[in-house]
Image (cartoon, one colour):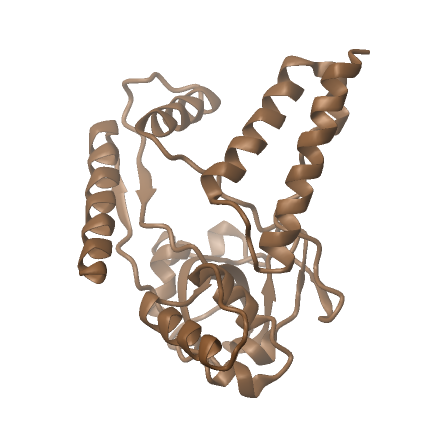
Length: 287
């Protein structure tokens, strides 16, 4: 056994655990997402290069559920997205997908593209159209029940519209827009309290408040990105009710443009257009 490699893995593992706690549990990150991903990348590469340490492979998504909330086991695991910061990352993703599906690289591969909201992942369960509970992602398998808290968000309907199955689970992101974030931090500062590092952590910290009065003072939003029907067989539910298509029909808020693109160049163009749009928006806000 290579002790030097094991020591390096141990050091990186402690760093990842520390920053996971700062980000997911304390909602107070100390480093950027890019810096965090770089640490994780180094860790994963060491494991791949030294398969004798495969038992140390990272499996945890998010963080362990907080002890201050009741826990709930997801009907289906809530997965985490893999980050991509460059065009090469997108190319690698498409190539991996083609390889997994045994497709030729020049074959059109239809991919659903939309801007990513950096918020708190949430699962909303509806029974006979009535909101039953709201659960955070937690570690991907078990989350925190925050039903009373999410009911304060106007974007989340307490009852679905039109046709709906007996049981449906809507998944998306709870977030705070930049204007609300700036107002919140100004208020925190005026009261001599700690300010939030970014809107994502402000949203996560708000939804975990035990005092509903405090939560009502903060403006949160919700964007749905998918719906799953865990108790329905595919032949009993039409293709027109595929998750992202069904969501707006049910009266659930979708704030982002969802685009289906079959060709690599279109996917790259969509990525570049959204990046330019985001940068222009930031420049306008800073003027």
